[in-house]
Amino acid sequence: MEKHQLVCIVCPMGCHLEVTKENDEYNVTGNKCPRGKAYGMKELTNPTRVVTTTVKIKGGLLNRLSVKTKEAIPKEKMFECMKFIDSIEVKAPVSVGDIIVKDLLGTGVDLVAARSM
Amino acid sequence: MKYDIVVVGGGPAGLAAAIEAKKNGVDNILVIERDRELGGILQQCIHNGFGLHVFKEELTGPEYAEKFITELKNMGIEYKLDTMVLEIGEERVIHAINTVDGFMRIKAGAIILSMGCRERTRGAISIPGSRPAGVFTAGTAQRFVNMEGYMVGKRVVILGSGDIGLIMARRMTLEGAKVLAVAELMPFSGGLTRNIVQCLEDYHIPLYLSHTLMEIKGKDRVEGVVIAEVDKNRKPIPGTEKHYDCDTLLLSVGLIPENEISKNAGIALDPVTSGPIVNESMETSIEGVFACGNVVHVHDLVDFVTAESKRAGKNAAKYIKKEIKADAKTAKTKPGEGIRYIVPHMVRPENVDGTLDLFMRVDNVYKDMNMVVKIDGKEIKRMKKKHLAPGEMESVKIKKEDLGFKEDAVITVQLEKEGA
Image 1 (tube, one colour):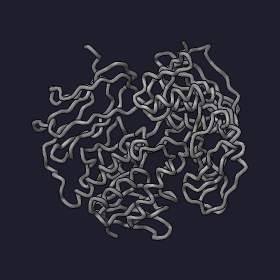
Image 2: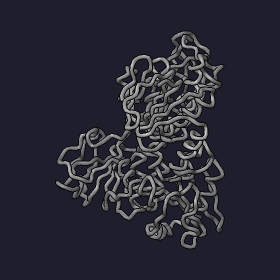
Image 3: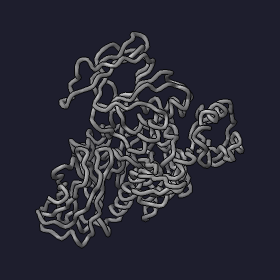
Image 4: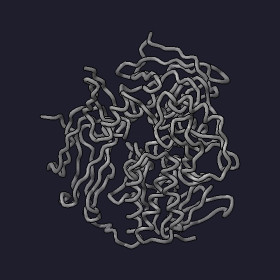
């Protein structure tokens, strides 16, 4: 039996989780809500993160537009995505939620604007 | 100029307070913001995790801000940008200045202070040595990177483990910098546990607890830093020095409510929080002047700021409508064993709406404790707490009907060991 100690990062509560694996079955304890259970299992099978960053913007109030991946993407793809996002430049005006990149590097997740400018 | 309510500061606290005041029947409201846009520091906090309590979804800072800015604009609440409040004078006259209107005297029926807080700087923690470029507070670096589009460094050491420092450790790493270490003076982190996990452990950034900065090397630009372990008196232990070659030092060593205007106006401040002393309505020691958000005490979550600011906005509206009982009997709150401070500082039960919410911070890391609320020594509430830390704000809800007491009562909150 495998045992893992994790801290849940889904919300600021920061529950201390214990995830055990037995015959390919995961069991999560220490979570105060169902999201903690889902996180604990996912973290050991396919860890994902929402990436929040910025892209260049021309003609806006600021030099950078804040963007985020609409859903979480696989953790190991983060740096590859960051490198790609680095090459993007958009023009104002942009509205919050606008798609900046569709299907970011084949992850099936869109990169969207996180503010209007 | 004359307004029923003037809100000083257009960040999350000011926006929520103004919106709530309007919803409670006051139309003539002005929000004054010194920056070029509304939203405050949220605009540079592009990471997600905001709004889980208020909106039940995970938003980034700018998204959270935009929801409130849109609502404020749709409600037709007036605001002035690039405008600096200089002073609050007698009888709630606000002196403010900008390049369009020039100098203004604005008479307010009620004032809501929501100026937020500012970061402690190098000067505040007395780091000796020369002053090379490359030393930033974490928040300044955040604004440079996330809004202005300047990278602040390539090899970074972070002093202090406050949430902004942790968030910047991740942010700088994603942007291609190498974060060598985070050093924290205390034996525990000042930030949320989830941020230690998702900002440091995810990227294998070492966190050194009970460590401090000994030296900054370099004359024109930071060339390196030395950190060392400290003993329990926070004195560096010789021989534990670690040398880092880096070009940047970020400071995340605490936040202080920004109360220059409050001080000059003669508002009484709490030396522990550095914010105004407030009552259950979030009213300060000057009648008709309310305060909310990080200007009162530094919150961990903007969701809590929003809740508190709504209370301030609602009560400012009640004040305008003369619905607040000023001469009601009053109790004081007093932090007991293990508690550093309690907000609010004064409670008039007659003005409490449903429940009284007390907010506090503990003075150390504790496990398996009971948090006990007493009025004049009589226990009215007891809660089990598995884990308590100074970096995580605690709150207690007390029902209005449990607030029966005589004049000049004292409400205490204290920690007791489980089973004691």
